[in-house]
Length: 115
Image (cartoon, rainbow, N blue to C red; front, side, top):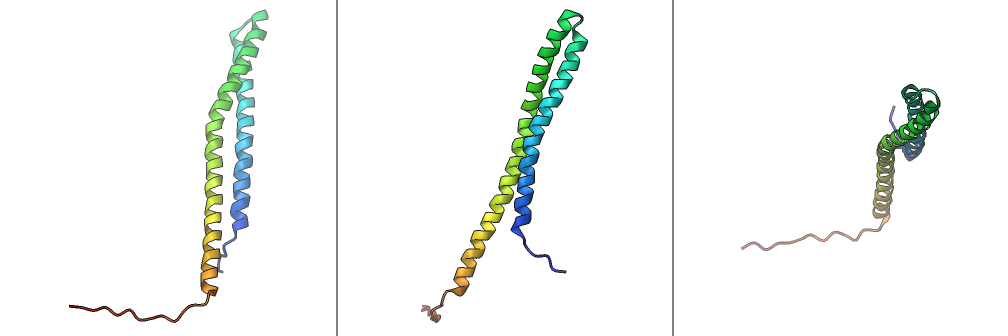
């Protein structure tokens, strides 16, 4: 069974990478928020527990989003690299097809003089 080149597979893979990149930022921010709230509640008692929970949630969300942005950028870069390869193949194929269809002049032998 011969495997055929299909650029739509690469494009759908790139779209999935972009979707994953956007989800990872939201998910990490939410996880950081909840971990920060739990840590804030554990750190503070009584009336201070609510203040610590809010501050912990904000700090946790900030840390989660900051860490996830690097991973999201790496996923977006991977998607762009795949799309660039598709564009290179498309342009190369178009040029090769146009050269193959162009009429060719008869080849003239190159003579060189020695001595």
